[in-house]
Length: 327
Ligand SMILES: Nc1nc2c(c(=O)[nH]1)N[C@H]1C(S)=C(S)[C@@H](COP(=O)(O)O)O[C@H]1N2
Ligand SMILES: [Mo]
Image 1 (cartoon, rainbow, N blue to C red):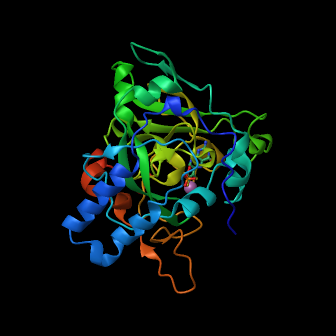
Image 2 (cartoon, rainbow, N blue to C red; image 1 turned 45 degrees about the horizontal axis):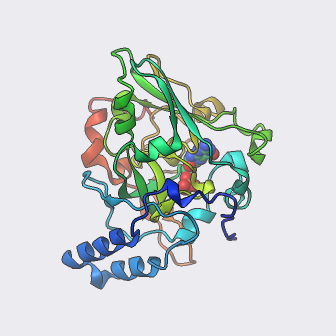
């Protein structure tokens, strides 16, 4: 079942956003697709259909990214599907709950605290974060540990842009992300389904990898609340739960942090959580996935790729590690 995202009450003043033509990136995409001879595959048709755009939220365009792997040449998931089939347990556990309930999230004012093992801790307001580095559009696959995936044009910049400003010390081996947990705004936080606040973590070199994205938008607009407004992580080679939504604190640590999912079920959700078709979840296979929007009766499942297809970019981070043990 699908629900229209409730976008009212989360509009932000357009003065917060650089007013530029969001469709520039779409046109560039079409040019690229044409140059690569992809128009015959119907890819450009898909993108064209999406130039009708979500159209309700403030625009947030991004320049086409030059980061290797930052541009998946696959049919984009529709905005409708990507914004109505969500995991955001702070707003309920059904896939349709976040789109129904997240309109109560207040994304202004918003600050992110930077703490821990760094020379320059501090607090950043969302307006400053939006201006911290040039916005890029990254077309990434994201795969949920539950066995579905999507392809989304995210808008943001590499997480490393923010982390390096804090000047992490030599003791900073890990980065911990904490997200908002406010009962007054988030209907799901009253339930005990997870140990709130939602916590995730990355090893320092993973966090500094250019593919790790701090996202503020998608489809040329600011993030809708259900997708993690006003800022979230997108770590495309890891299962979706590593991509923490609505972040309020980033902390540099010497010790490996314990994520909410590891706390909930350690044998199921390890720290690394790299997409790996060869390591099954204890309760199901991870060998294939369903692309959301392709759920017709005859839709074929897709084989899941090592590191979600980003092995050329990130495989080296795990050289010599036993990936069955470090799941
Ligand atoms: N704060 C928070 N972040 C979260 C989650 C959550 O429940 N709470 N769910 C995660 C999971 S399981 C997935 S698959 C992705 C889903 O992101 P999407 O809704 O943009 O597809 O968000 C992740 N980030
Ligand atoms: Mo997920």
